[in-house]
Image 1 (cartoon, rainbow, N blue to C red):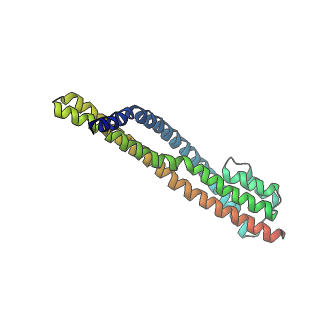
Image 2: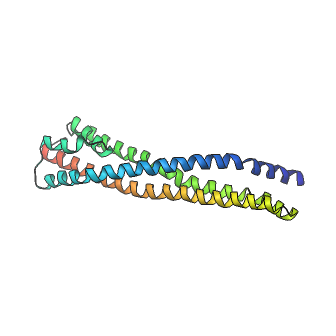
Image 3: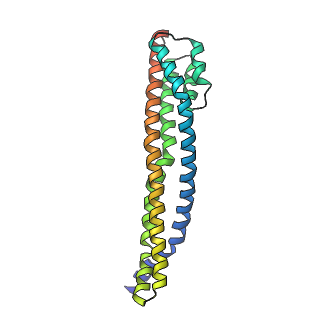
Length: 200
């Protein structure tokens, strides 16, 4: 029995370094994601007024081909897919495929945030529990210094893991709202153009 428990102990302790390495990599990815998120946010602020004016023109019945240049020249996923709809001349089958592809592209963009949201707390928990064994051994043997080091590692990995998960959760939540809004606008534009142009 002691042999089996020793094997489990060796396996768990050997996982500490890989967990810390992956946690640090995830932390860097979370910081990069936060920077990219800020860039997308600033770009959406500039694009928001143009899209609002563009949609307001639709409501007033001002649907001109030149109007699409207001948003198609912008660098965003929404603008890219509006440009695709313009290129296929609002053909029903092609347009529905493009709208469906936009949904898939939105989901793909959210994958990184979802991964960090789940992976961060998992790695943080592993990094917390693994050093607890050596810490208890150090406490039992009277090695307070060893116990303090292991407890420091345990608490640090917890904080970093929660931080990674929080960034993943916040970015996923906001991006999901953005993509739903863009999808609704894309479908709205397509339906109006289909109706007015009599696309079959």
